[in-house]
Length: 430
Image 1 (spheres, rainbow, N blue to C red):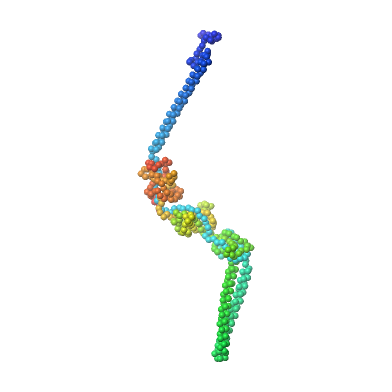
Image 2 (cartoon, rainbow, N blue to C red):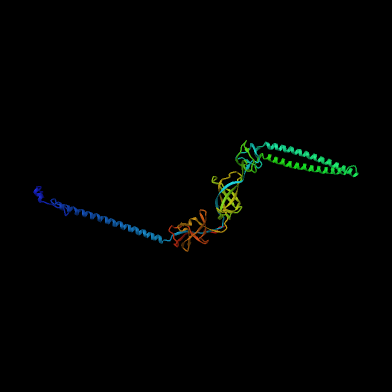
């Protein structure tokens, strides 16, 4: 190997290259810049080619995925869905109807004072259970007692006056008989005979007046005795005291317009439950229909009653019928004013068609049902009559021989072909 000469002359004379893109040591700056530009261009072209190759691979993969999705969608569209079909049910059995109600006492009354005076004794308070005829309070009215004593004394006077008048009448009658005999014998004048005869008539009239006075005074005594009896405030029927407005020493007034309310009493061994029944069920509710009453605060307990009376006329504003249900409350568990729920068994006047609630379709076209007919789904618009949760009553849109599709595919359209996976039949209800 020849040694390399490092002298300046040798360096100038010996140029070397490292390929086409190599830059000679003794190249000018222009040549160097051109070489760098060519190198950058080649690197850019290589990078672009690589990106284009990657894009091409991605496009191919996307096309393949899209093609597979389209094929799957077409396959699903061309496939016939399997559905579960159930025959409609025709029933005439009574339907359940639950409505809110309000309890009230079977009988209730507000007791007022019939005699003015002061309450000398109060025997009951709110919550007291009483029987008919029990004394609730006593009113002290001494002026009535004094008037009654005076009237009784006057009655005794009048009775004595009657006896006196009867005695005078007897004497006048005897005198008249004696005078008549003397007149007939000529020992007495006719004038005297007429006078004695008129005296008898006058005494008879006096007896009649005395008897009339006694009858009038007896009526006065009876009236005062009745007023005196009002000093005892009596329970009109069996029940419980629900309100007390007086206490011992209270002044009460017997007045038809400004009388004093003393007590309120209610008979609660039987409760009235008042219910407003809508028009569509009112015609089927008659006296004797059984009703089950429940109270939210008494879970698990049902009170059985029956329809006792109806208003026989619907309210024009609400189109509802007032119905009263009588419920036995011998144990006192129910209270007047309680909110409750009343469940009736309303007889049906005409047979109705029932279908499962899951067969309904709700969309912009309204309420619809898919009917299975000759291997195809037929979409029909229906009108609901009643909804009890699991099943619904259909007013119009279906016939008793129809079979409805229960598990509806989301994309099911009218006229689509379907196959039956499960077929259920239904018998007419009794």
